[in-house]
Image (cartoon, rainbow, N blue to C red; front, side):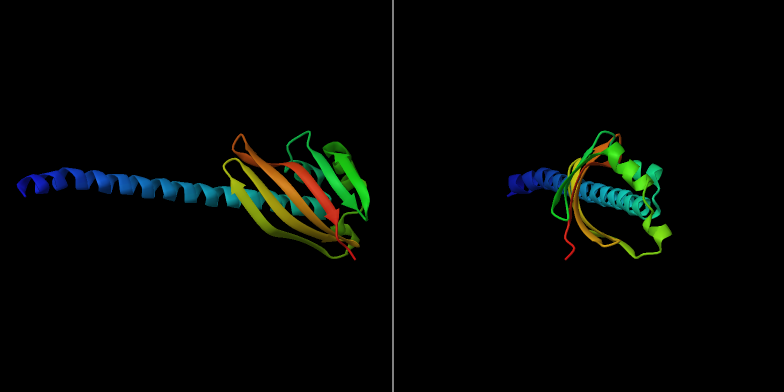
Length: 154
């Protein structure tokens, strides 16, 4: 009995320390997930604001240079480089200046380590875009590394 109590005296603190370390790791992971989620949401808010205002500097800051944009608009294939996309934004009237309604909505964000995917919806002019934006955490910043877009207007 004495041996059992002595063993419990030495083993029990080890189990408690392991449990605390496990809890600490889970807490750190949850905190990191929260921080990453907030950072991605900030990037998306800058993305929406850049589109709305036609601010190509702000909009461009949300992308990793060299990304490609793919999809279809009104049933037609859509492919652009980042430079082509930003040039189009620069040379059109912004939704803000048009006075027409604009809505950018985050539908979901999924994060796995240093990658993430956001599903967003952008309503502007006569378009209702569904977009899938791929993110990568580069130099501690969440940047869009791929944009896929389709127009679901009826």
